[in-house]
Length: 228
Image: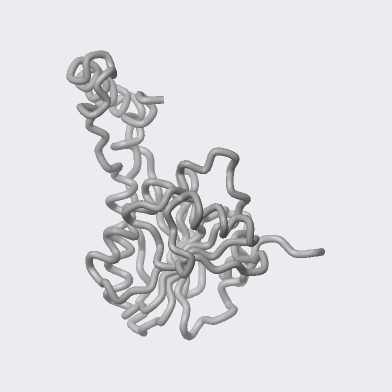
């Protein structure tokens, strides 16, 4: 598990190709990209919010983050930015990861003193945050919405976004059931301003047990699942 964390530090390279679109948008929605959901007309159907990107092309811009390596160029609407994600050379990364691993192994006395283990922020977190900060600034974004899974890169980019624009409203949507041991969902630095959840019980657990304030959580009807 520890080696896997070191392996992920330098693995990813992210870049984007911006459209020649100088208009401002009010909302930025980040979601995770599955190529099969890209439509022939250039729009994208998002599984987390059950929305097509054409629903509000005047006020809303989307950024799609591939869950795996994605080198291809896609034809898409102007209000969609698809991030390219490339993995660095596997053997080179293995070599660097082994160096990190053994440096920290000896420095922490065989991982007994975990305070001495130096887990760096990943390239993925840093480059994604840089891309988001640039979009928010250039497009004059007021609201930022994303499917909240309490992942380290999410806390990192929220923290960076708020650092650069403290008026930006960050909204996380918790699209899954809270896990049996919900330690990831303990409120921490980089949490969204508002967390949307599905169910009164989930809201109660978050504010009674995990440190969230009651007014930071809103219970809504599920966006991802419907009765059909």
